[in-house]
Image (cartoon, rainbow, N blue to C red; front, side):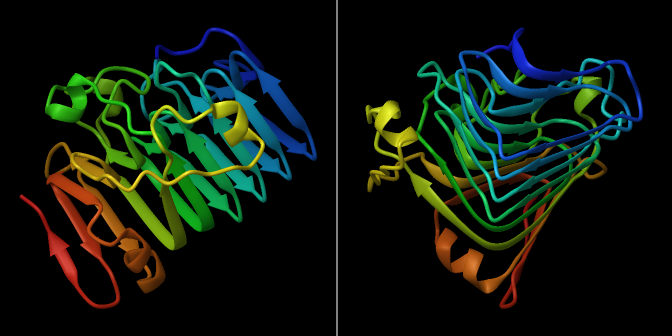
Length: 249
């Protein structure tokens, strides 16, 4: 899908230095639940349920990567339900995304951390596999025009707006592949169906574009166990678990 043009809550590009906190709010929309491109903004989402047609929560890199958005998602459930391929949480700025005690689902990606600091703790990330050219090696486009995975990290594009490292810290994170052709309305009500097939389908897909703009992932043993062998690392990626350190490229 392309960047959504309608959001329930939208920040930016002005005012800068914004602070927004949403607590105990239910959002249902055909567009995006919350969308930010405001420089030096801090967004706190607590105890929310978002069912969105576009991104559940998203950022915009049109003004370059260094606008420093900080986003905290705590004890919330976010579902991006567009059948044409949506992302639960899209974070494509050189800031910090914190997800804790939450569930995030997207029909193409659960969480897409294209750059910046991505911290996920005690949370479940799920997706429905969505095949596209990017899944098979094509350069990534704007928005979430990129491979399908529960958690997608890094970048495969020469676009200036995406040139920065991605650093992810994962603690007690679980992953779910939701059955293709499942009823997203049922899913939004809490039912989860696991797709056991795994050809070209990954819980975690990471691509480091260059040595300077690489992907660094640190995960605890629980996350590593939950991940199993459902991952693909390409380009400049390093992964550290309590039992091993892996370097690609």
